[in-house]
Amino acid sequence: MQFVKGMKCRECGKKYPHEPLYVCEFCFGPLEVDYDYEAIKKQLHRRKIKRRARNLWRYRELLPLNSRPRGALNTGYTPLIRARNLQKKLNVKELYIKNDAVCHPTLSFKDRVVAVALEKAREFGFRTVACASTGNLANAVAAQSAAANLKSLVFIPADLEEGKIVGSLIYHPSLIGVEGNYDEVNRLCSELAGRYQWAFVNINIRPYYAEGSKTFGFETIEQLGWKAPQHVVVPCAGGSLISKIDKAIEEFQKIGLTEKADTRIHAAQAAGCSPIVDAIKNKTETIKPVKPRTIAKSLAIGNPADGPFAVRTVQKTKGWGEQVSDEEIIEAAELLASSEGIFTETAGGVTMATTIKLIEKGIIPRDESILVSITGNGLKTQEAFTGGFGETLTIQPTIQSFEEHYLTNQ
Ligand SMILES: Cc1ncc(COP(=O)(O)O)c(C=O)c1O
Ligand SMILES: [Zn+2]
Image 1 (cartoon, rainbow, N blue to C red):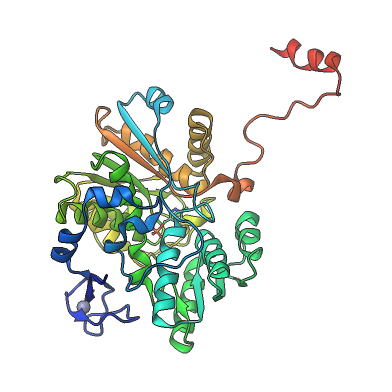
Image 2: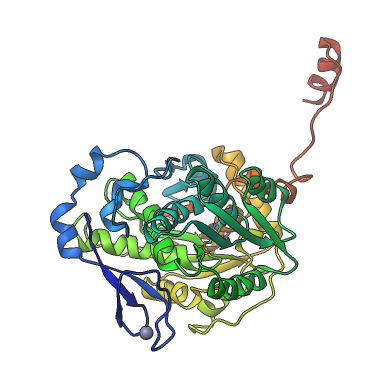
């Protein structure tokens, strides 16, 4: 089944063929996939989706593939939970968590984009895939290309968390640690993409890769009973996920799977790297690049490729943005874990803390439905959390020692 009409410039609308292209030759705007929504509307309905396997391919008509996906690793259909304990603590009526930190091959939402990118790379005939990454994308590319028998080159800032490095190396990619920040890694990779015939998933096949993020939105809507929430809080790095969640909501409406919803989409960033939130607050689409300094390394992109689109998404949906300190990130991650049993990485701490701030400021009303996007797993960023949450009580292996140390301290 083929529903892709071609590619289209996100800025000037110029059309391009269905090829590994990513930038408009007229205005230098980024390209996106152009679908035949009328044809999809005739083919896709709720019952059909419900009957399919619980992975991201259940929405395949709205993904840019020509052939049946072959991916060996099951990706997607992560849990959506009603966070009743947090609801009480935050004094809000309807709080949900979409937990993309579990049920993916490498425990982050980046498995979604990589699953789509690698299928597309295979269709286009690439034998080598590559990426510039702040860590999670590195893990996903390394793991999924191992399973797909593709050679992979993974470029990261050399100072990433141990969990992210080991979580790539174990799959035997060529892992290249660059002495510099993500923006420098990305610039290098853009140059390499011009020189070598490799599929850089987030550079030369970015328009296809980015479509994978829509499935986060599709699943959320399906899991909420075919209804979008009133508020979604989304962590931003390159700024792609946030605009694709909006696209997901729009597409489900366009093909008649859901009623019109006025979902407000809010951006979450760390105070040490908040170029997108700064632009939102300054009411401009112009992104002023920053030098990142935050424990939320996965979000540390100072010059976000999709920054202006992230801002537009927020402005269009009447959302807002907040930035949070490193202390607030840790506190919020602890609150989420101790209230709901979900251990998120620093990026999730950013999202949770931002949600709290938006509620406290009255930007998100307490009686409206809220979805918090938890996109990565805390086991990968343990060093950011060590030392803060109390201590292990060490005892001798005797009842006497237990009672002496534990019971007397109760
Ligand atoms: C855990 C996590 N959440 C969110 C994001 C942000 O995604 P985007 O770059 O699409 O804004 C990233 C990006 O690396 C990430 O690793
Ligand atoms: Zn253009």
